[in-house]
Amino acid sequence: MHYTLLAMKNFTRSNVFRSKSMLTMIAMQFLRICNNRIHGFLLRTSPLVEHHVMKRATSNASSALSMVSKPASNKKLQPKTKGGTNGLPRILLKRNRQTKSFRDGSQLVFSGSIAKDPGSLQMGDLVQVEVPSEKNSDSNSNAPTFVVGWGLYNPSSLYRVRIILHSLLNPEMKAEFSALSSDYGKEGTSKILQRILTMNFKRSLQTRHALGLPMNSKTDTFRLVNGEGDSVSGLAVDIVGGTVAVIMSSAAWCEVHKSTILDSLKEILPEHEIIWKTTPARLKQDGYTLEDNTEDSYSMDSVDKPIICLENGIKYQTYPRQAGQKTSVYCDQRNNRLDLAQLCKGKKMLDLCCYHGGFSLNAVNQGAKHAIGVDSSGDAVDTCRGNAKLNKLDEDTISFVKSDIHDYMKNCEEKFDVVILDPPKLAPSVKALQRASRKYHSLNRDAMKLIDDKGGLLMTCTCSAAMTQKDGGKYFLEMVQQASLSAQREVTLLRVSGAAPCHTQSPFSFPAGNYLTAALFMVHSVDSKDT
Image 1 (cartoon, rainbow, N blue to C red):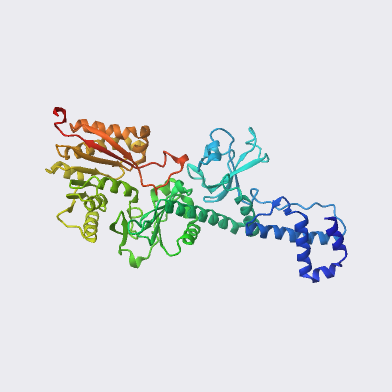
Image 2 (image 1 turned 90 degrees about the horizontal axis):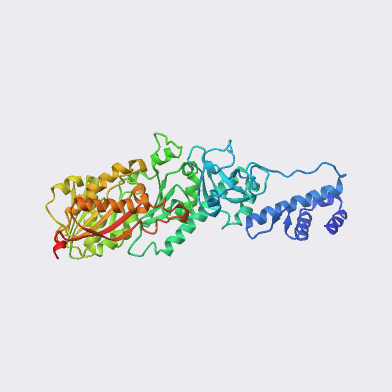
């Protein structure tokens, strides 16, 4: 440093400022002498950080020249500070056993875990989540802290912060975010969020590739992003037909940062059509109310045009641009459809609540003697028939009936070798569990009565998280056992499975993220006691 200042004295003030190249050279010399350390910033490989360091270096070199030409001042230079250590607002957590889970990877921060209400923050603000480095220092805002991660704040939600990036596995991000905040100010926040989302989306795509998705000539429809399983709580993205990405928004931050999400997704899916859908009920729970004129985002000219998608070699007509039915496909049952179909060769099967006919189509494709699909929706039944034609399946081997499944089972005189029961969500919450349990009981009882007297298979499903998670899943299985007693049929549990692996889960969200149960039972013959 001493030699640098001596060199500066050899130039007059006017000469220095006439030569821009000389100033740059001095800044470079200053940078090297400081051994790549400028005001506590370490030189990194990131271009953003290099730019930030060079900017600081040039500024400091200019200050040094000014010191040579001006009398010394007793006034100390004050560093510019805003928000947290990197320009983002800070959320300080309590340091206790409960909040250790956030340090270890949990994504959902409840209000009780926050040491002090931040007050002025708005819904959807990107925040830096910190925890005191020492015990008993929660109330001291000046106490040393370490960064847990970065997330989206919501003062109206049960989840005050949804963490979307943890710093323990991404320590280099702190310096990069600091550079963005310093160089771009408020605009830097959007750049930071887009950087995080793009990272998460790229990682989710790598995960699906590891699962063999998309699978050439077999499967081009799958879940690309699955909320907390892919570190973006409240957001889901399905790939439909290999050409369309359907976003499902169920958290307030998704609506606030809709444009940033779209830009990030387009970066990894530049050739895909992107459709934006919402779940108003969940958004309302999260404190966000959609305007009455809010519509899903898609091209109105092609709303009724089907997208042909492929799953397990079966073609389906889907209508993702239409309202309803979430993203238009239920790819969570992909593996269960194929697994059950492989047990249906030469058998008669009944598909209750068939929706787009997935179980029936797979069964016939795997050699089932005959399959019947039943659904109360006329549109669903029409789609099923269209899918059968699309796959060139004979009407003698597959048929579909529009009927309430209660009425169908009550009046049906046929018996089947395999029955699949996959009703819609009957228990949307824990409060509805007892009432829903009675419905599940009666449905399973009646389904067992339709299984051949010689015995057969029953796959029974629930997509209600409350039912799946109750007593670790035992509650649902015991209900089926009780239904078998009412049906006077003995059952043996063969297998319990869940959603396809593209429906990723965070270890810290399990079993909260576990919603689907598909239980396969052997329903024994009515005269098994005598054999």
